[in-house]
Image 1: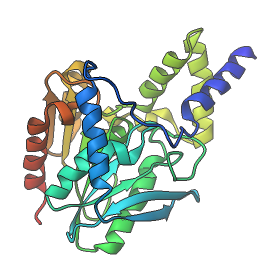
Image 2: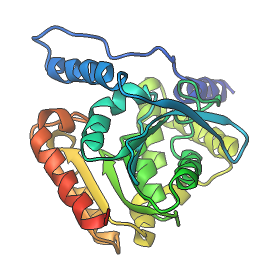
Image 3: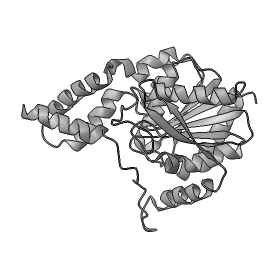
Length: 294
């Protein structure tokens, strides 16, 4: 009984709506993340000066989901899919400025249970991929003859892999940065980090609650296995310090579509775009040139 109570507490702790005001804390120049965090803040200030509008959709289960849309008089659109408990606008500011420099419209959705979007729990991708498909529909209503790129980071990178198997009008390719490759592994990591005592029992009960809450099977979201049904070209990236080389190359092997793996030397989770900017952006440009016609 005690273990189940602890598991329910763990479930709420890991999946409840995060603080909307959560921000990257500024650090001193001696910190290894100083340059990255400074770039994040500067990019956010810059992109907020660009004309934009607040947009919203309704999810399949009735939630109002909100986002920010930066039009660029273009038929090309990039949809950013943010990470676990992330502030979508902050996380995407730097890469969004890059995509705008290439002539893209940019859509930055807040995933369910994040920021101004409704929702009590984060579903770790089990439901979010359906939400992104509704955002794709919204872009297609605005630009029926356009081309769409979906770019996800971390949990968002895992969602991008889920989307790779779906039929989506006008989507041409997907970029998946440092993806969580399966929900079970991601949930286990979060559980073991949060639960210092009997983490396996807590994980077992919390997983049971997860499956019941969202009506899914964890095996349905084995992204390495399911990628054999991919319908779009993929660009997979990660920092060398993450040691994701093997799993990303396994995804490449399993995918029937053109797949590129980019390992960014000396980088950690999610900071490759800042530390190896030229290499990162050059790879994306080449990938887009191969897969978009506009």
